[in-house]
Length: 314
Image (cartoon, rainbow, N blue to C red; front, side):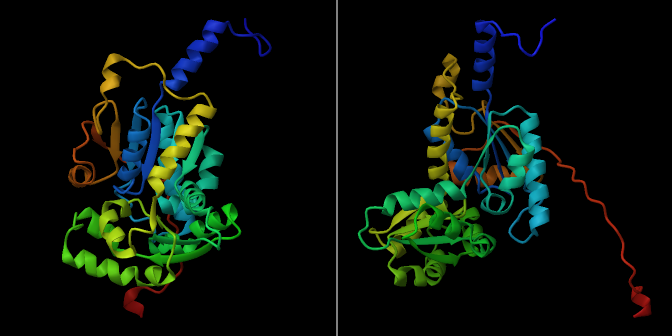
């Protein structure tokens, strides 16, 4: 009988290490926008496998209360953790802004959100400015209202000036693939007017949908403004974290050396509208997921009635 003080044989320790390294990276988002984070992770970590959950039944998160976002995020995280992952990436900006501490409390793996990496990358890019760097942030209304990016930027730099603007229509425009439509350019000009007036040095794309509209945004803000893709910044930090924690997958099979986006080594789950998810994935990534499964995430709702007058009494 073994005990807590007994040492495992070296080969056993090595086998366990190898098993953990071979586990996939978990990603969840409130919908399809997190696919841009998946793409960035896939490009920077070609040796890794991924399991993605899009909570399409409950999107958008930005209109929900803090308690509701926390519950959704925890349910999503526990679903992925139950499938065996070595690290969790919270690709949803709203969940990253509101629920990251609660997720970390409940999940027994490393957790990385998208807001901190995006903010730190913006500060890194602008740190050589002799004057106070000006950093713009465009995001959904909920993310802007949370001030999560502004706070994260100021934690990384006491010198930076932050200019925020909500661009809610960008989400629908990206999903419809209207990046080349004149209406998109007109809407973007109106949204980004104050950002252009502020003469920012860098602009954080603080919603996972926004990289789809990168060229339109670049056309308006100008070539001198560095666009920060939070997904790409997150992928950089995940790559470093895997290295630091010795979690990177070094044991590749011949099949894994020829990885492609959305191939059958990656598994995608959605909580609703699987066909629409596949169509948008093809718009975002150029290919549909090979393994896409519709599932249900059952919540712990407990509905309680209140003493109110019946409608026919009013």
